Image 1 (spheres, rainbow, N blue to C red):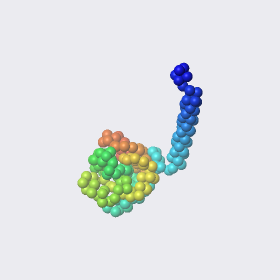
Image 2: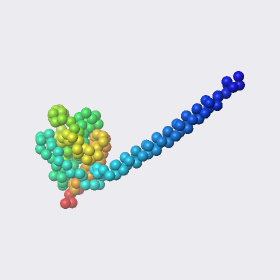
Image 3: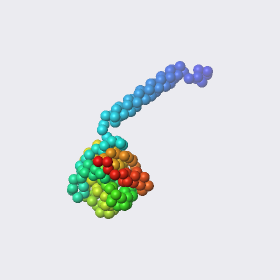
Image 4: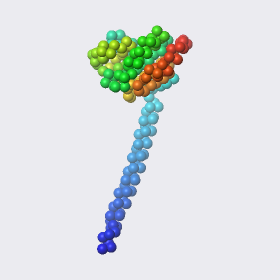
Length: 193
């Protein structure tokens, strides 16, 4: 009876072997995760995404009215480049505040370029007609500008000063207070060209 109450040596060896296998597998997995993170960091370092305090990457996109709009044409003005989509709840939530702020500040030199993320023109035209926003909507039908700016999630806003430098990158929904705090100081500064 004493032999039945104790685990057999075979059972003990199997359990120890499994434990060592799990520990070894965990170490391999941890090494792999670290390698992936390191590779990701190297990819980010070698990619020329738009970054704060750098010159904004120039682009040309069609507007809803089929006029080509080029970012550098707005040098001397403060530009809010907002990446958005009509299926994105935080995007939809921030657009009324952006539009109200734009209507109040456009005479001081504010431009809003709302770049839509790969939706078809008819969808955006219907959306804009329904909402009545007055800012400029650009169509990034292939996501080229979005990728160039390193946008991974929506909404994202790039606030560009009068000299064409990115002064703020805001990920997520912009509130009316954030618009005021981030953009109004730039509007009061004249272009140094």
